[in-house]
Length: 382
Ligand code: ADP
Image 1 (cartoon, rainbow, N blue to C red):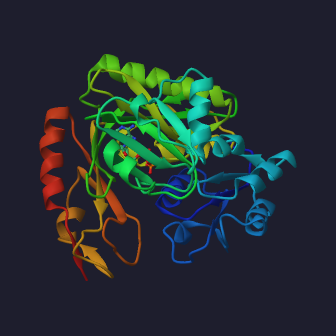
Image 2: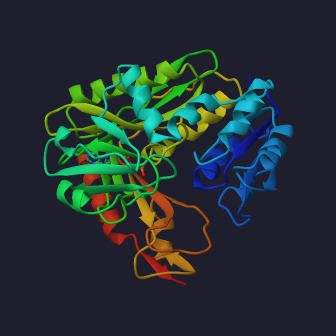
């Protein structure tokens, strides 16, 4: 049984909201406080208490720590140095802030992969005054990434070598220069580790991205990728996470190259869009699992209950401001479609507004139904 009575969540976005949905169902007596700079945030209505404050400032992070037996985060751009101080002072923080310190800088993260024998795309770290040395990379294009501050593809450009040589870096400061892998498939595995060191993972999935928004558009589980590759991806992900020696929930994002290599791209040490289908599709969802880990419980079972597809509901280019999901009555009448709206009051182009999960008895039925659902999903002004 859980021993802890209070939990602090850094960040009040949709991941915090879904963590609280699971937590309130499973451990209703635990007191959850959310820290967020925006009062109008998805997680606030479900929290027992709310602290309005910056996620980077020592003062607000310490205020959250003061009312919480355990701390976690649902977003990476936060004041990690304060978390390292709090940990040194004896505060329980899951995952370990040291993991966050590594992944907040894509350069440090890549060096970590190399030092730990984790396969990753060939790369170089560059300062603004360095020469590019582009002939070290095959092909016409390379990938340039800002080392800090990027998310959802912001801070990443795929650029022709000639254009880079003839122009300036699109980013200020030091960058990560990486081999461009043509036609990659993007795989992800979510690994859970409890405080006793027990480890489990959800099966690997492949994500289908929207080329304009760079957001995950949909995914299926079980994945249609070759089983041997999925198994290897899961092994690699479990190994990366084992190297952290930390409890927590970790999404390992990987590329499957045309040549069949698996490269770890990055780690998200938190719940992840690639695991939203676990709410309906698995015995324990990624959110329920994280809640268990935070409260010192052992991992829940992680087997598949239903083949499931997840489709993101993203703000269309043509609508801004107040909005609704078209044909609400239809959606509430479906028993195999689960709509999760994140309660954001306004839409903007490419803003994540919600997701739906579709479940079915078999994968063939799932694919047909998911296509039908995807075509019907529409955000309209309200
Ligand atoms: P972010 O941290 O913003 O999500 P990523 O490193 O995941 O940035 O890159 C965003 C997207 O750019 C990836 O999902 C992938 O589609 C593409 N990308 C990034 N690195 C490479 C690469 N080395 N080769 C091919 N495509 C890449």
